[in-house]
Length: 445
Image (cartoon, rainbow, N blue to C red; front, side):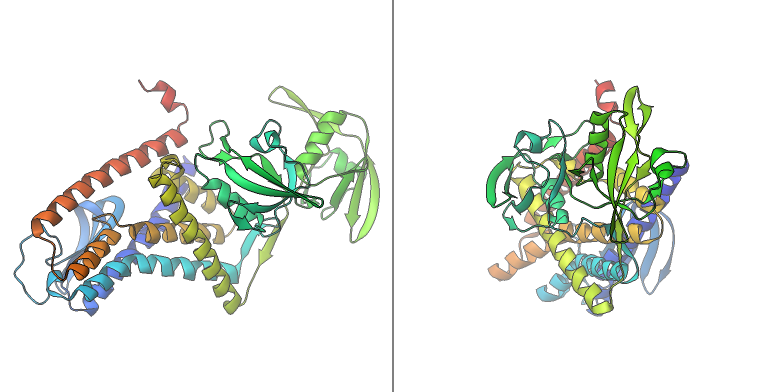
């Protein structure tokens, strides 16, 4: 129950701020050009509470799934008087600015928030911005079937040269239904491969089955377990077991499983000095499966605190990269090369918000807010009527035609688009439920 309340409160904060910023963009631009704003609403449907000032009804409405700014004479389905403060009485370039101001504010919010995160406390796994060297390959995974081996370096993926691990993870996430083209460097040889990502169990996202090479730095020691008794210390880096180089924590786990309860020689780096420590693994049982453990954890992270100029530059670069990925995913959805299941709805956002809120500090939640705000900004610019991008597209068409499109045609366009958006929202929420309740699909007729 506590987790549910945290997720709900976190989602309310994240979506509330993003919706407020988005609608304020439209509102501020409309006010600047002298357009009368009748309603500024957070949420849809029945008015719950609010106040009226300066001819505008500022309200909170019953359905917290978005918000809107209602400008005088904006809808093609309402009567107009031709008054100078009506939306349609203003030049097309002003209407264009008003339409683009909402998504623009979301993109600006993403840049500002991410800049702040980079300046204050950006914590991430150490491998994330490193060259994509494979540390481990899961058995029977797509990567294993394609012949990828630990130590291979990914030098190209989906057309991107010399990717970092963050690039690789993002590329796989938006690959879609087709295989991903990969170039692997092994020694002096470059191997070209096509790898088809697969869905892992109940996970709704496709995976390849490779894991990053990362330092196996001891970040936690379990008391009364072999590692602590043998003298391992926090900060030690495990580099080999019985002379076999270790490239990731999973490689150690796999080796111990094969080795059983026989003692192992663990090679360490401690303050730059190489040490050898003999350890006898302890046998444990998890879910009926025997495991052999040393009793340490390795979750090395890097914390960045950048000056403003560097933080802003990095924020702009990250937002540009994520924007291109969003556009690429939308393109693949249109081409039926990606699944709509990859998109998150309100339930998915609540789950992600709850997970971020439970992490130490505010920066994980702020980072998530920045990414969702960017998504909201980009998706609102899509040329779909009712969305801001649809309004912008109609304004461009009218500019090229040098005349307004007839009210009757606009009415049909908006009615069709409304039905499409309702169906789209229903599909996204259904997919959310399937992710949140994996067994529900089997119980439905």
